[in-house]
View (cartoon, rainbow, N blue to C red):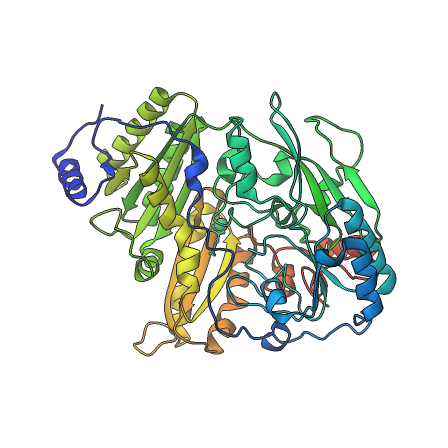
Amino acid sequence: MFRATSRLHTVCQAARSTLALRPVKYAPAYKAVSLTMFNTSRLYATSGSTKVVPLTAEKYPGFNRNEQFKKLEDSDVDHFKAIVGETGLIYNNEDDLAAFNTDWMNKYRGQSQLVLKPKTTQQVADILKYCTEQSIAVVPQGGNTGLVGGSIPVFDEVVLSLQSMNSIRSFDDVSGILTADAGCILEGLDNWLNEKGYMMPLDLGAKGSCHIGGNLATNAGGLRLLRYGSLHGTVLGLEVVLPDGSILDSMSTLRKDNTGYDLKQLFIGSEGTIGVITGVSILTPRRPKAVNVALLGLNTYEDVQKAFKQSRSELSEILSAFEFWDNNALQIYKKHSDAKPLMENEYPFYVLIETSGSNKDHDDEKLTNYLENMMVDEVAQDGVVAQDETQIKNIWGVREGFTEALGKEAAVYKYDVSMPVNKINDCLEDMRQHLKDGGVFGQPDSPIIDVVGYGHVGDGNLHLNIAANRVDKRVPALIEPYLFEWVAKQNGSISAEHGLGVAKNQFLSYSKSDGMIKMMKTMKNLLDPKGVLNPYKYLPSQ
Ligand SMILES: O=C(O)CC[C@@H](O)C(=O)O
Ligand SMILES: [Zn+2]
């Protein structure tokens, strides 16, 4: 039962007049929904922009082509043709190569002349064996939805696209264990599992384009890590082709297996630098029968933390996502979207709370009590609950829409950091002040439009984005390494879930000790002595 207060009543009346969404005051009318509706607008495949993207090798300092790598000759192309067939490659065709040479945010551009699209693991093995023998550099590529330039060539590396390896291999509907090719699109897998009452254990805005292999190579986190954990926990086995062409088959379907080193873990998050993932065995959870999504407006970051703490205690096992954004992020989103506002008034912070469970009445009661407590205790100033799938989609649409909205600004500096939850807003505030002090923010003619924050607050993961109305060299110089130093002081990570690619590799020492970096380099040299796999990335060059 809601304890109605006049303030709550007013808030809810106001909300009711502008929204189809149900304000939090009213008695539950939830519907059991299927997660398939989380297929929001899938805009990650292309930005649709026609602007010419500068070459990564020219835009960012410090790149020199490694002259140990062979320049492609016709005989090499003929060799690859014999492996993948005439239709399994794209060669010397700028138009067709463009999508493989550029990222969807138009930030990175490579100069590859050859894309290979193998159909089998053996073809991948034959390609890598030849590349290592001939010292031909290779960039493995999945759905190309990354944000750090990890899947884009820097110079003339051959692109090894996994897009033609896209079959489901097996599914056990008792254990929920799925085995699939690396080139399967995440959303395709999720839809397929939906028919069987299961779901993928990860979800991200890019799911309509990203490949499961790319998710594994980058150890993608996404929107429900809070509930289902990281890929390091849900992956049971991998099939990986090593640079020498050998196939490391650990496609286990066992939940328990303590025989030897857990080698598959090395490849999860290795960004294609020590092997190419071609197959996966993954534990999938049952698809929840009841899903609810609520949005709260809050006055302070303290309140965000209170709402989170309380959600863990009151919603506990049914809590499946706890996301946040600040009003600054909302303003950029509004600028580029004609979606109707979700709340009549604006607040400094918002949190999206999702519950997923098997008993609708039970979940409704828990969520209702929680939301009522948030309002009555004045932790939240306003709140709405989605009443149907469209409204769930609309709320998630805002959360998932920030990346694309920011991409429409003239320039955006993207950071993906993790730290103790209580430091997240300090990080944003400090960065704003630092940029004001540096003279690039806060004045009418400043290049910076705003510093915005959103992300997986429940995981301590902040997406700090700095939008600018023009390119100004002072801006990145003020952000880096300042932000990395700030994060390191909190014992945080300079890359929580997006990876290192070419964007963060030189800053690795802010998150890893010398000893760890040395060990990583040793592993790299052991598995890829010629350094042909995804060069110029991931590890610092000196
Ligand atoms: O745009 C970003 O910085 C984050 C993208 C993605 O990780 C998200 O959580 O929406
Ligand atoms: Zn994220």
